[in-house]
Length: 158
Image (cartoon, rainbow, N blue to C red; front, side, top):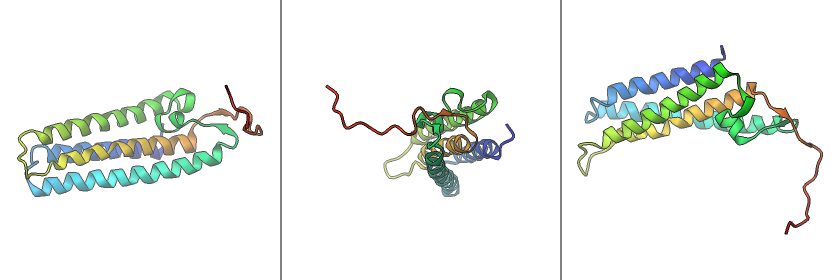
């Protein structure tokens, strides 16, 4: 489990939780709003980049390996060893729960013209999905392609 990707995911989750910890009690202060928005957007951007890299890498591997989207981004089946799967899945779950909690807290007591900057947190789970994909594309275990030389049939069914 010494993968840099796992450590990056856990560190990103910790950064998000720290930003939320500052932004929630100070949600009406501009600096706290900017902090949560910047952290959330940065993690989202990193997650999008990681997801795209994972997808292109998985396309290359799919020539010989049977890779499913759920295997790639949600680590289903035997894709990852238990410690890695547990760490990455837990990080993603924490990101989702913290983002929702922050958005809900941000709505309470909000006036019509005020910004719920805590809602930017809902972008953060893309980081966890991207890290899952990056790990699975690089280190994931997949079965062999069922029939890599089979051509699709033009025959209509039914």
